[in-house]
Amino acid sequence: MDYEYILNIVRSIIAIVCFFEKTHLKEIYYDPYAKRQALQGSR
Image 1 (cartoon, helix red, strand yellow):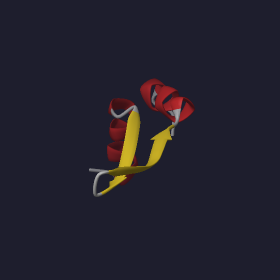
Image 2 (cartoon, one colour; image 1 turned 60 degrees about the vertical axis):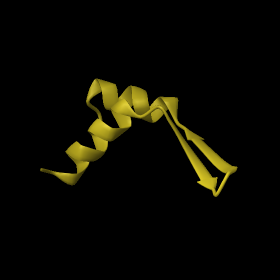
Image 3 (cartoon, one colour; image 1 turned 120 degrees about the vertical axis):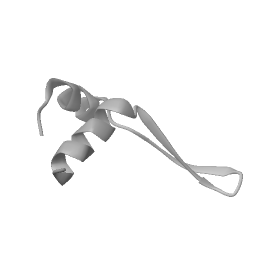
Image 4 (tube, one colour; image 1 turned 60 degrees about the horizontal axis):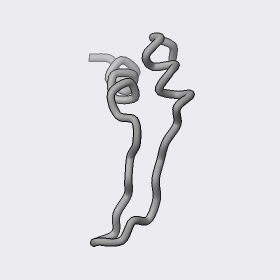
């Protein structure tokens, strides 16, 4: 499978990504624009 195709599928499924260090939240990643583009099939 093409890398861009897989990345587009992942972006359309996952809305929020949280990064933890042990039990402490370090970063939250949320990009609604990228998700909307992925759902529309754009790259």
